[in-house]
Image (cartoon, rainbow, N blue to C red; front, side, top):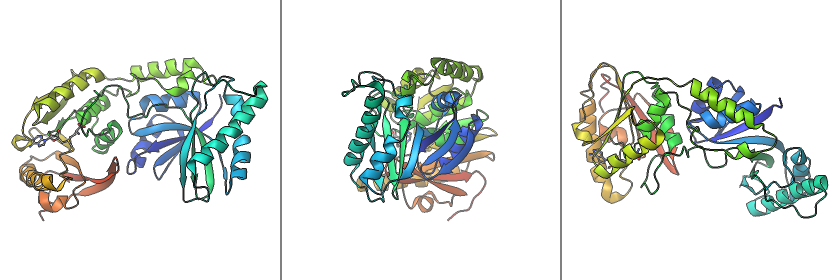
Length: 378
Ligand SMILES: C[S@@+](CC[C@H](N)C(=O)[O-])C[C@H]1O[C@@H](n2cnc3c(N)ncnc32)[C@H](O)[C@@H]1O
């Protein structure tokens, strides 16, 4: 079976987590870089990565990488790639991408040149002057950085954060890939209590349930590459079956709560859509009545940030009170709290044992990590 190089795009800060995921899935030669993870895979590996990755945003199949100081180099480099071996006569091949820190700066012109090169290659192979582009979509993605061009095919189609469980029209929910990353960083795999006292639409507890159950997040959706002629249909069926065989049948102590009853209703609805309603509980509660109980537990949460000045004082008051509550937690508990507030530790009243920079959309945040009983007060 042919071997490919995959480039998995990932949020800044989650590269290491995504690399671990790929290794656990048995993919080869895994290397984390800024904003992406590279690995090698055959057709099974492409299906496996798409179906199973929790933190990856997209799985790209890298076709080529070449020096690209000008448009001639771009045309020649693109034309030399094996488009005609991979794309059928009716393939649709839109092109999009990014130029960063390079002589080529017009993304539109780069896309046009790449389209011309691919169109010429396919036209020559199929003896057509006009290509119909009525078939499966082979989205071409380019990325030129410091004059080195990379050309890829997007195997995922819609971003992998789209698991298929999220209701539409939710205000400011956390991306599923980021929520899953927070849960994986907390090392929750189903043991002990799991709590999110600011659960909103329930993304963190739902991702925790999928992780506890070892349910592949991509089983409820489709991927662009499922329609590609050069990847056998059977690999997708085999990989879906493999993923289902690896699911656990357990019960877990996962609880999400929120002060807003509408958010709680939405979270319950999302849990049903994700097929984990029997594994997660949701209830309406003020986080300031939250009490960690039992011998072992994790709180993984994303409270309001107070980004607008008018909300800042309120958010700070909430953090201060939540800090006092946290310091009463019994031994064996840990807290992973995501916020963009730059003075969080001061307001919370305690230095974090660890923090990790993560991006929530364009917003720079930190994931503050605490263990109960470590009272490093500020
Ligand atoms: C940033 S959102 C959480 C988003 C969530 N992670 C998601 O994916 O939808 C913060 C949530 O905290 C809730 N909240 C604000 N104050 C609260 C309080 N005192 N107790 C519990 N929840 C509160 C809000 O209703 C909101 O849903």
